[in-house]
Amino acid sequence: MKMKLLINTRIIDPQNNIDEVGGILIDENGKIKAVGKKVTKDSAPKDCETIDCKGNISIPGIVDMRVFVGEPGFEYKENFRTLSEAALSGGVTSVVTMPNTMPVIDNGSILDFTKRRAKDKSQIKIYPLATLTKNLEGNEMSEFGLLGIIGAIGFTDGIKCVQNNRVMDKIFNYSKNLNSLI
Image (cartoon, rainbow, N blue to C red):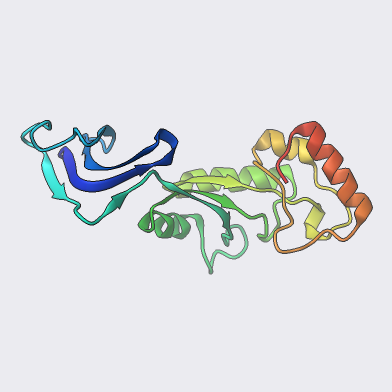
């Protein structure tokens, strides 16, 4: 791959308080080497492929915080590969997936399988959520400690509500003690 120079693009990076028209220099490996209004045709190597991005906006990758993926169990609807392709086409580089799969992500083995499968099949970062309650039934709390250790970034029952006040109280206490995201 040849070095690329994107010019005349509006660069928006809220983390670094940047909102300006400038250029982006990308090396042969697809890594960004320089960004900003000082990145121009004159400052870049002469053998770069130059792309005029006038009227376009360049932003850091977007994170989609609520994604339903069909894998495991509903692969005929969507899998990690198709999710990844669709996300990338829209500028999404990371997703947080809901635990409403078949089987649901309520134990360590399913979470571990999901994480490994996502890593093997996806081109984006996938952060799985685990269930608040076993089998999304609202009666018994999932194993927060173990699921957190294995890599659940948070807990939800997705589109279902936990109706049992005692179970919800227990969930809040555990999440506070384990510093878990609900």
